[in-house]
Each structure stands twice: as C-alpha cells, then as structure tokens.
Amino acid sequence: EFVGICVQGPRLHKDDLWHTHVDYEICLHTNSMCFRKKTSCVRRRYSEFVWLRHCLAQNGLMMELPKLPPWNPFFRLKNREQVDQRMKGLQEFLEIVLQNPLLLSDSRLHLFLQSDLSLSRIERCALGKT
Image (spheres, rainbow, N blue to C red):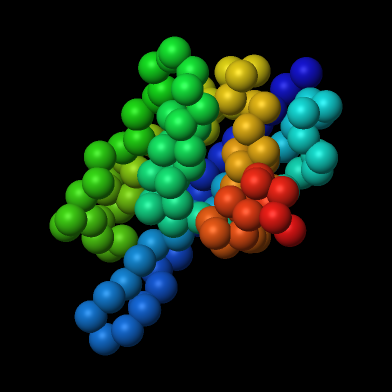
C-alpha cells in the first residue's frame, strides 16, 4: 500500500489592489483503501493548511503533530528559495500526517486533499450537515 503526495505549482492570486495570496497544487496518488479517489489534484493556500493542522489537533489525540513551515509576512513568489522552502515544508507536513492511521480517519483530511470544497463546506460535511 502506498500514498504519494506532492505539493507543487505555486500560483499567485491578486485579490484586490493591495492583497494577494499564493496557492499550491496538491497531487495525491495512492492504492490505499483509505481514499475514495486513487488520483487527485487540488489547490490550497497556506492558511488552509493552518486550518487543517488545527482540525487535526482538535481530535484530542495525545500526539505531536508535524509543524508547518513558519508563516512569513515578507513571503514573495518571486523569491524562488522561499517558494521552494514553503512547498517542501507543506509536503513534509502532509507526508507525516498521511503516515498516521489515526489522522487518516478524519474526513476533513480526505476532503481537504480530494475535493475543491471550501473550508466551511468541508466543516459542514464533516458534521453531516450536507
């Protein structure tokens, strides 16, 4: 059984005149019975990874969750080293999470990795409200 995860393809989005954000493509390839889709690609931004880590921490598990790369207020897409470091850190976070059977039981993790749903819709699905 294998689960391969790759964080790649950073893309800059201009929200308005003063605000931008970067999202990343997360590609999952697996033969694990844990996942409904064997191949999927979604786009997520850093703040959504922060949300996911918070959700996993709320499970009340007595374990140390992997850290995310630190938030950097001066992050620039044009700085290749910063971009590569963040992508590497996000990928390492997911690789560690996906090795833990207890974390794999969280439906929010699966929806985060295999659907284009917003975080609020993921929450509603996890609570059985949709």
